[in-house]
Image (cartoon, rainbow, N blue to C red; front, side, top):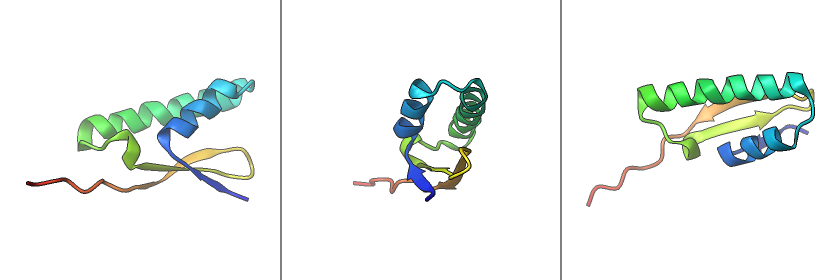
Length: 70
């Protein structure tokens, strides 16, 4: 079953992994996420990642949090 993850969960998967290929894939994905954060003022908590049964992690959604205007 595919599993949705947040940014911190993806980092935790990276820390636990022993597969060089998986580590490289996740680092590339996180670098891409940081580029999006920098360009579009998106925060880490706005990203939705999915860990697929095949062992791949992808960004599957970006949900910008509501800005609070007081």
